[in-house]
Image (cartoon, rainbow, N blue to C red; front, side, top):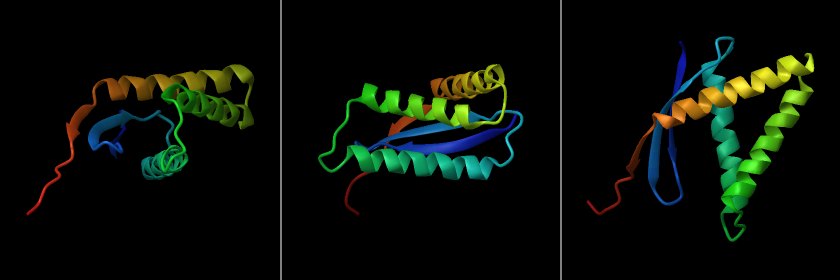
Amino acid sequence: MSSLPYRAVTSSGTVIDVAFELHPETVSAARVGELLSALLNALDTQVEGGRTAANGDVLQAVAMALALRAEMLPAPREMKEELARDVVARALKSVAGAEHGRTSVGRA
């Protein structure tokens, strides 16, 4: 089983370290990591600087984006839906085992 180690740092300084289980047909773990960072950065841009959004609204938008990306695949509907469910289940299972901490802030 291949995995993608990833560290996310929230705006409040919480660190989330997770090893994401990758789908067996993943072509490039490095590219998956790059795309994940780009998506998280885009979301941060949208919800920071006075442009707040409820957490549920953010999750709903992400779910809709996943559904649309799945719909764009040139494959039968059942296959697209199964793939989308599988990658979401793997990601949720992976974050359930994530380690949480805080960033170090202070003066030297």
